[in-house]
Length: 292
Length: 337
Image (cartoon, rainbow over all chains, first blue to last red; front, side, top):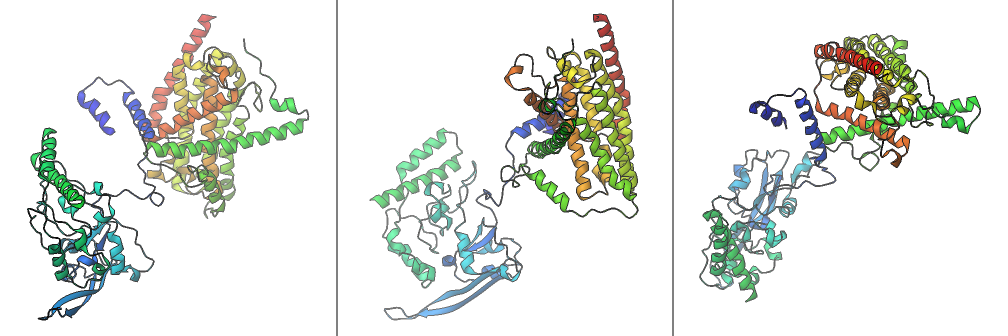
């Protein structure tokens, strides 16, 4: 706004007396006619960006009780209790052991929102959630337990689409990364361009990335991986068996070529175009697999 | 040439002198209590939107229309603090001295050729005389507060009044010379063909600027410059007395907008061609509203003038210009005759 007056001076126009005063009046008048920027917060919730760092949420099913978050936390505000369970395999042999999470709590009176726990979590169990309304009347009540942390994951949004010119994410070659919890609630179309976000709903696997098999393999393979790594996770039990939902698919080459050509025609950068085309191809392939 | 004003509508309804007096007093007071609130609310909202804000929102449920009513209730509840060293009687009297002149001025403001309280032959003289009384109240407030900021503010207000009263009166005098009457109704009626602003645009600007300074409105609000003297003469005031000062300020905006519309914008007469579309009081209210909006608009736009700039502007720019204006009008008037 003040730039206008500066521009006049820079352009060296002959200054008419009072012109600056009139310009000032038009600035305020124009501002008045534009909508106000005020956020009517308690009445209207703010429209926060997808990456908002509101609070740290826990996807319990993804947690393997590795304690990395608790150890890296500079404030020591993460409390984790767990015990070990051993299961005899049905066919005999050595028992399989698993860690079971009993308590996961974050003391938000101590937390300084550095996000190191989210960074170090190897299995995408911790997320930044846009939720920010968790004030309490007592400091003690700011220690939030895992049930509350789980609720906050429901508000995690899928990551925003990649910017033009951005490098496609490393895990974008069609492999599944661990599920982003927000994907379950978000409409499929809103899911972002990163392929990471398109992991199959229902699979809360901690399985290592798999390269896509040429043909749809039997669904049992990833399901088994889940079963091995977190055999007794309670949340997992509640879920319908993932194996029935999951179908491994490979890129739908036809869609890939078509979308890529369209985007390149539009002048999109090749890397971005490839990423987006790959995503479209994966979605198309998955749809086909579901139908067929 | 000068159209005769009809009798006031109150006189038409009642014969008894005392009944008429009471009704007129109530109407004038009612106008003075309502119109400033409307302008005050407009200031809240316009200022907010000019700063890309929303302004009051909750009071009264619809766009905060009752915000100033709520403010009034709050002011009534506040403790009435009088500083220990203050001159108590003068301190308490000052808000009334500031406010009453503006109430009295409303008496002569016409809303049509029959809707007015009193049609004084010396209307404009009365208005200008009354509006300069209120600065005595400001001086009283500043002196009796026993506070250096109050005193500085009051003296600035007095110096400003002396500086800007002159161009104000000279601008009004040029209008009076042109229209040949001091009565506000007479001045309005004689603009039925062409508004005075067409003949005396410079006079109009001088009058507007000078009234802004009289009201110590931004950008001429040096007497209440909050960054250096807190709130000038009103620093020590609380509660209802402080509210009276605010009411006087907004009442002053209404009164001087009304006088400016009468002097230059045809008063209650609409623009010549479309005048019959709306009744006269609506035209008058619309003009008061438009000028009040302009006053608020200036506040949102311009920074405060420094004290020396303010004095220099009046004595070296406005006063000579106003004198020139009077001279030109006088010469044209005689030449045309």
